[in-house]
Picture 1 (spheres, rainbow, N blue to C red):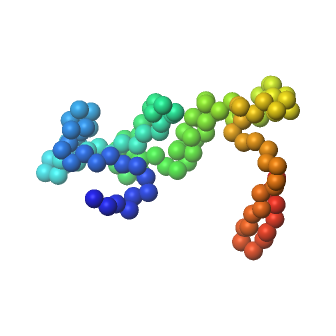
Picture 2: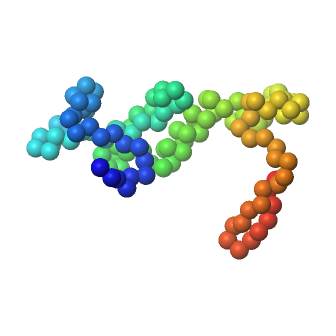
Picture 3: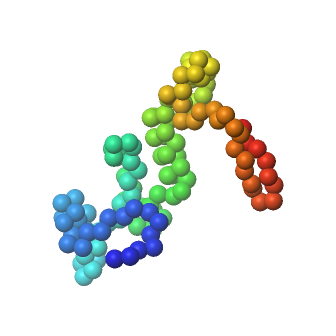
Length: 120
């Protein structure tokens, strides 16, 4: 089946997961739907947060997902706060293993709208 969805989703036509996780939507017997769930995952597919429900009161907003992503990154990235003691010294020593980015030998050329410039 082809889908235009731009996010990962679970297809469970036999309702196996629905039964295993007991997430049957009990207010709509004829259609047998599942209660929608959104999972925010950490590395290793560890669940950080779960949202469940319909419409605006159950689904996460972009702001909530942004806050969750920030919390996950703060938890797993040593370089999340560049003010952390020792990070500047590690960078100056060339110890870049704990950093997400590294210095480029050549600047990156970019275009934004009509302007062309260099980002360093």
